[in-house]
Image (cartoon, rainbow over all chains, first blue to last red; front, side):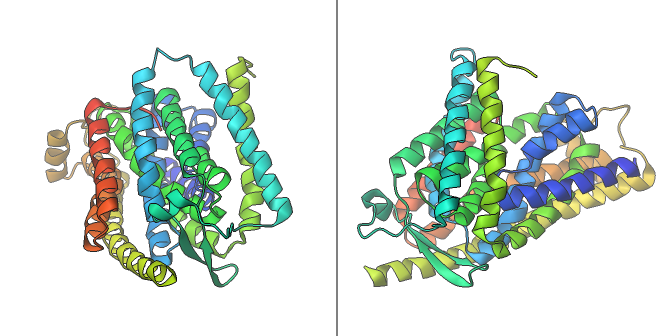
Length: 281
Length: 126
């Protein structure tokens, strides 16, 4: 029993560090470890991974808020899209063939991976336009964050707000319909479509994921999907890991984070494409 | 324009500090409750409930916590953790209100309402 608790705590620390740096939540890391590694029933793995998402979000945003990397206005504005999307997705279950969603989002993620690679090649992280985007200015979405790696304040502008909002809505639909985590989509919407720098994108994604996950977590909580003996030591590990990870993330150059992010986003994208095409391994 | 933007940034910093504090307290409280439950579970070696069952209603969890049953306390801590993002939304509404940003009071309130609606109809996923 103590052994299980220690393993789960260790897994949690790892998932917390990785999830908070990349803004993808711990679900993607937790689920395969629990099902493949520990032979846990998928029902309990999903329950544990939703707690993981919330723990990553809450653990990491403690540090982010103090360090002002997060963009709260972007988070709240886009949260409208993700939450209504999640409800729509849940209502569309059985109506819409998930195949097309897998294909659509698979393509989007691969495109986003390619786009990130180009950004990496160009080495340009921050967008500065002469003419600021009208909607972004009206909604006060443009922001500033302190980059500890570069040791300076970085002003950035946000653009393509309608496109970002639409992708967020789609991400919500996908998560409500397919039951998949949507951290990668959220980072994609902000980084690729709205041209936000990677660090604010990642930390804003982390905050948003916690909010969206809270709604579904209550359902899982009361239907018995959450095993305390597994979820609690894991959540404690994640909280600690996320605090460490979010601090590490601020010191890391955006380039490095992007280098780690690209293969992950491509991996998820290809996995979804194969699922949509009906290819199983 | 420039002046207005710096004022917004300063206001934002203030808002974020308030939210950060309250969230810290929320997260630390849930972590402590979970930790107490886990320690009791590991020391006694008992969940407090027969077999692989666990308390699933708020009433059962509170009664179990009163009797210091490990799983009840662990579930209570988990529930507190689930509520921390909701707390964040509520506190943000207050913070935007203090900032006199009516647009974002409306936006964040809308998020809270959608969230409550989602809780009500029981959305799965994410």
